[in-house]
Amino acid sequence: MVITKVDLVDEELVELVKAEVEDTLVGTAFEGYPMAPVSAYTGEGIDDLKAMIDDILNDTETRRDLGRPRRPIGVMPSERTWPHWA
Image 1: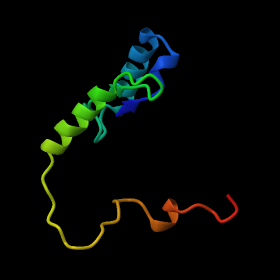
Image 2: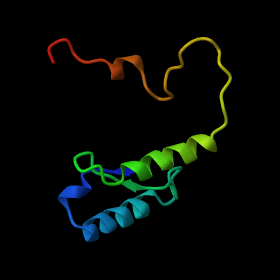
Image 3: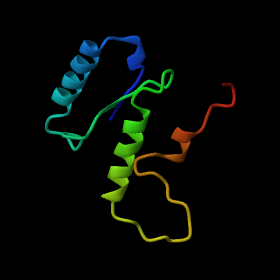
């Protein structure tokens, strides 16, 4: 989980958001996932986010290469397109 724009608020609010997200995720598949507070503007937390992603990928089982692209689970092709008028 990534909490963004932390440069716009104080640390106390970031901690409050983290606690609220943790409470919301209790009993779901995302319970206990790590959270990374980051700011794209200042770069705060970006190195921690990269390390978190590396750790997750190191613990993830490699899938067999079938020689074709995979569609993300739960994403229909129509959800990934922009309307022609946008």
